[in-house]
Image (cartoon, rainbow, N blue to C red; front, top):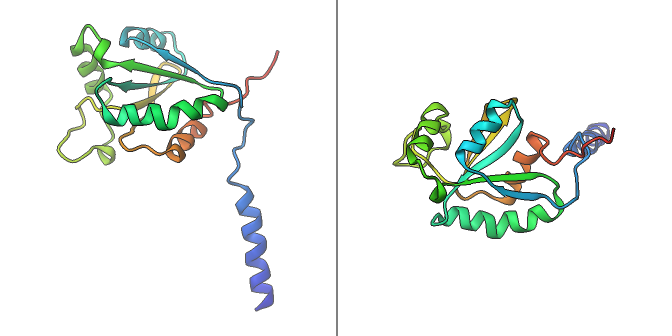
Length: 161
């Protein structure tokens, strides 16, 4: 019995440490950029890797995220936060077209909405110009946001040449 308990304790010690990120995270202050959808599409055409979010000025969840999570988080997590503020978009149809081409994940859609509804905040991870992941962020917690940042190593320390 003692060996079983000792084995469990050792396993917990070993696996408990494995939750640390496998990369060096930047503790520099991050940046916030407001982009138009056209600028996002241009970056995608250029094959860039980046994250952006659709937000709205009148969105309670967006305000909550910016005030209660992003404002503190960005201070010591060196990553680039890009947002497309839908209130500023001159061609709303282009936003609907983008979402239709990159539908919301079915398991993240709030009741009463569809895969092609424009939901805010919604986070997009673009890798080499292609949307790789979409995360609908209503009621997002700091832990969930941090997991998203770590998943794509968005705060990875850039190596010096």
